[in-house]
Length: 134
Image (cartoon, rainbow, N blue to C red; front, side, top):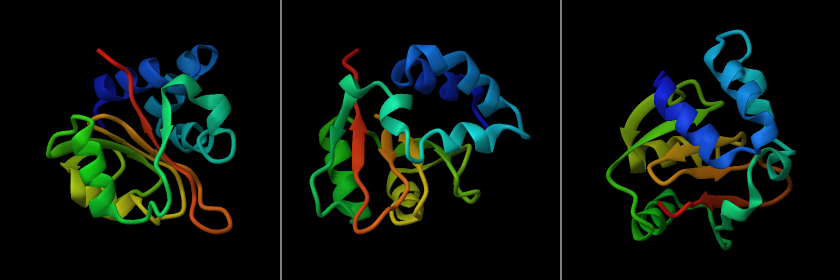
């Protein structure tokens, strides 16, 4: 786990009122899952909507999402915060991370320029790019 990277993501994109609590939860092995649960149904209250850009449907192709992220400045590597234990807390190639995150059914933040996937509901879930100008 890269605490510095996770703190940057939280401070950049999470609602200010939740930032300290989410950082505490992410850094605690016992509470990490609770932080991730905040991204399930209440992600519009958890994340700062002014930085959310919905990816138009169909949005289920990891390759197309990777290409879209690259257009927004993403590199080849990324850092992942995810319910998926196979990728959570790891630095991975962008396409590899997306192949594991997209369609998993639970939230992931893929940070190169961060990408967020909401918990799957009926039909294709909404997906967002979280983008903030430097």
